[in-house]
Image (tube, rainbow over all chains, first blue to last red; front, side):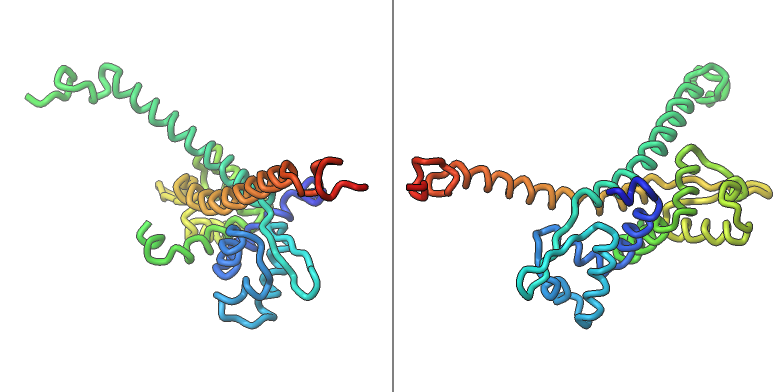
Length: 129
Length: 129
């Protein structure tokens, strides 16, 4: 996480870049069910082992995935902390926009309640005859 | 949202790709404070208007941003719905991993409590003589 403190942009660049590929997202979906080997990760993708390894490297560099070599097998697992960082960045922006929309809604509702706004119902000045 | 139903991968590719650039994330931060013009969006980035427009196009294609031309000014705003889709994809994976970690924690705690686990102290079968 030191990297995150020194250069917060760099990490999110890598995380979102890693997430932008459908093959890598499929790997993450698989890993969300539990740790697995690199070769298992590649099976549903029908790509070369070299291509699988390249995807895994991008996922590891982003911090979304970590791997450990036990004997001849490299086992990958998902890093919940990195997922949470990316999720938080998006949710902070989303919350701000939603709050603005709420305020706009309140403003419009208040405006509609005021006399002369044209939205006051049959008693208002624009009521149908 | 039709696009999302027909090809869910395509949209997330674009959304995460759009999020993977620090300049575009800065634009999104600005837009999370409220709608603004394209030229205002570009000001803090110190890049050409052509480059700003290219970023805005990528943001619009991803569905993260929508824009409207009023007179000679194009005003951009953030789309909370697209942010929510991306957030949901990440949070679903994150929740699954956290649940596994919880279960693993429970399993280890239970194992440590059981006799014969080697963690039961001197009374267990593997107690040192």
